[in-house]
Length: 266
Image 1 (tube, rainbow, N blue to C red):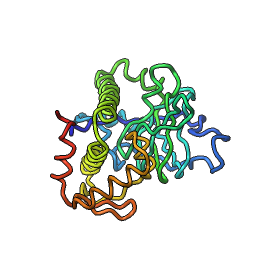
Image 2: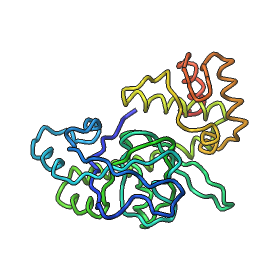
Image 3: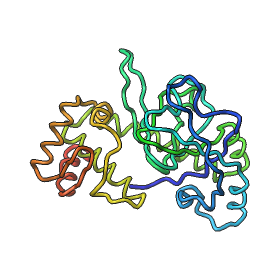
């Protein structure tokens, strides 16, 4: 899987909070100490593939704005005015949107190093809501500031286009996933994708804890909770996985790949 690098997105107008005071009952995100981009643990993901000291100096000159989001707290709401792009610094979030019948449908999961908020670019307001699955931190940038910065910087323009293209590709893959695959195929593809993304971040691709619930997985894959649970059980009986609540150990990756390839690449 090709991983797109994210240009530093850590500029935030300090007077504008990430969460509205009435968004939920939990306290708002904590303000965290600022730090230089070159000292950030996400540096390998964020900084461009360039040895030019001027690029690094430019990034270190930006005003950082990190925020902590508690588990269950919203980063932004569907329909909210679009102002910022966010990069997940640590933790995990999910995106969801409301269907015509009023049901919240999970549309994506986001982990450290991934960019979220692009759904607001098209119409000036967010098409989905973003919620923390666990205590998380994000870096944010004013989209207006970023576009102004990109005016004279081809590299930033290219990175933004890559990110937007990545969003389109993910949407297309989801349409294929929901339209042409069985429950076994959908869950196999989901687990393999999660494994690849974790491996790209230096984590074990075969032994991990899922931060989302089975209900969230079912909502994302277009399956009922009961079907997701039955499919996990089936994978255990086939000795593809060992499952202990949210802890997953992949014991037969090639078996999962065979199931995923039934129609994923057909």
